[in-house]
Length: 474
Ligand SMILES: Cc1cc2nc3c(=O)[nH]c(=O)nc-3n(C[C@H](O)[C@H](O)[C@H](O)COP(=O)(O)OP(=O)(O)OC[C@H]3O[C@@H](n4cnc5c(N)ncnc54)[C@H](O)[C@@H]3O)c2cc1C
Image 1 (cartoon, protein in one colour):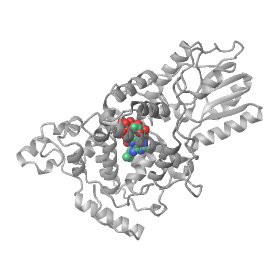
Image 2: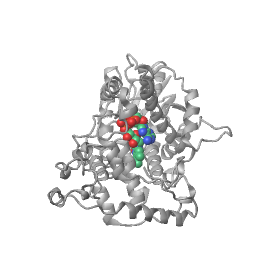
Image 3: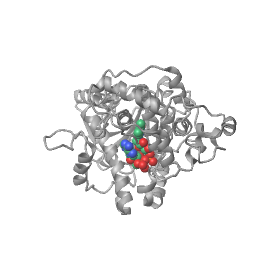
Image 4: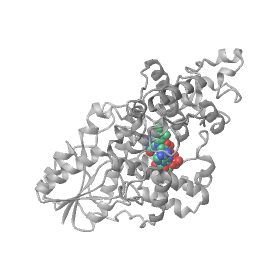
């Protein structure tokens, strides 16, 4: 039996890797990575600089790990739909093994590769692993996909007695000797015309394992209380690892279950179920990358306003938490979840700008930028997503700052103009005495919270034509 193990950017690891274990146990194994121009053409790579940096580092480590085990990662440029069937035939393999992707374009790619391989009489087997449970397998009483998170989470919980994660193979057989090989090196950031950002997390399996260990042995114990605090390192920071598969989601799940950390552990597992939910939603409704979940939001009269957009993207709105989030995003390729919710609500509700603009901006800069989670996070925040809460919930950026960044440390870190502002005014510096305000060199708010709120409610009510815009404010 000869197999290609096709690594595809969401499973950049040797531990808990079903295709690798399966292939290694049954004959010749050829690890392959395709540099598809869909991501790696320089003009495309420029659209995802932080994700590319994390991916390239993870790929380099995967290459080293496979070499250490006795094999070799073959890196080949070209369109996956052409390269994989061509090499599979050339190398006379019996089968191609890979992990399933949830995104519609990944599914279409796999459909086309599957058809081409079938023509050659070569098997194509997709393994589960991007999610805890196979997408499409968690159904409600009527056999459909859940439209609300809580019952979905409950239904998952009843089935989540996971098999132990697979250990990395101890050794791999060398590449077969008869391969005609046309490989290239893994490109550098410079090759793709990109600058490296030293503030980003390190990619690769080793750093991922260290992050998991540090989290389980530390912040996990207080996750229940600290996860919402923007000023504390209370979350796991494993989102990019889960996105690129330097850790499998079941490895993370099991590490937290084993740590038996009570309510904090349960809260954490619940977040992994939110991740699960967004992936299952996208599997069921691939059109969610283009359209709102709530159909009544189609054609919503979002505004066009370049000045507001610029202020939001550059972090000059005059609302400290919103500005801190904008700057953290570009500097670190990461934003705290609470800050993501506040700033996404601000863009869509206070500024009335299209959530898809914010969604694309986040996909550009986030290291953990993930189509399923980002799309559901933005739709949830805009009120048009899959959420039990009403669309007229509006985050008050000042109240959120006072509650989840009470001393203003998060703001001070990312908005240095406010470093000298006393905690009493840091979430609303426009209330500071004039003499202090002059020294701060920080803009006045670009919109008034109360007026912006009224504008959103009136616009939304006009468009949706129903609903009861009560005072729902967080
Ligand atoms: C507007 C918006 C956009 C978002 N875009 C992304 C994205 O592109 N990629 C991404 O991974 N997450 C996204 N999220 C979810 C969440 O903000 C991040 O997963 C989280 O901040 C990552 O930090 P962490 O790993 O320290 O999280 P932790 O609190 O340690 O959570 C552990 C893991 O659970 C998952 N998770 C946590 N919160 C959520 C959530 N609300 N929804 C879905 N999964 C969750 C993540 O995989 C995360 O790594 C978005 C949320 C919003 C509101």
